[in-house]
Image (tube, rainbow, N blue to C red; front, side):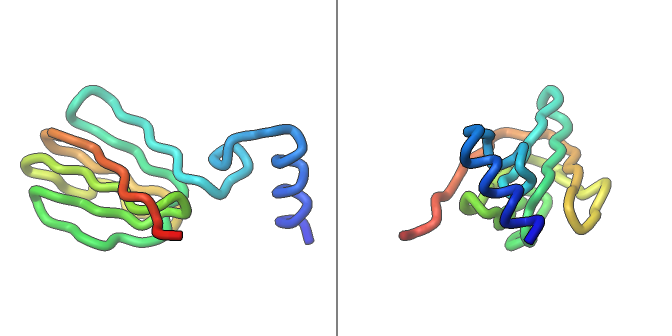
Length: 92
């Protein structure tokens, strides 16, 4: 019930999904560090690519020497030399 109330209040007040707690929040610090909150799962993990599933679609980070420094159920931190970030939309 509380989750439904949060969603309805967020819709009425036109809050972004990450504020309501459902969408991904991505914080990039320089080219060496990324914090991702509200992800669903890790799809791909190599030193060159990390791809995450989110409620908004997949998020793909490409780079060199990528490592997961923090891995929690709701957030993770990626470190390494980041070359690109791309979003892959969900098919409707």
